[in-house]
Length: 86
Image (cartoon, rainbow, N blue to C red; front, side):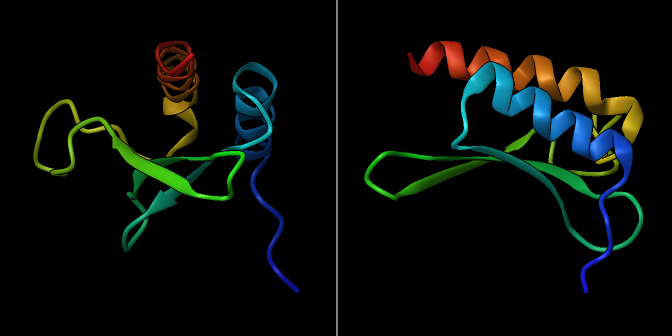
């Protein structure tokens, strides 16, 4: 059985789907405790497109990790990307 997601992850995913649509997904990618943030959208034809949000290098001072403190920024960026795609 898979581990249950942390509450902040469930809340973030619910917020993204509520504001952007049911085809929007978010997850942490990478190794270790500090992961990057990947945003994916599934289109009506079944194809998908993904992006890593923020700087990719953990050494960058603006790096956005996959942690609860980043959830507000992640939701804001998801909303902005969804609006641009409309």
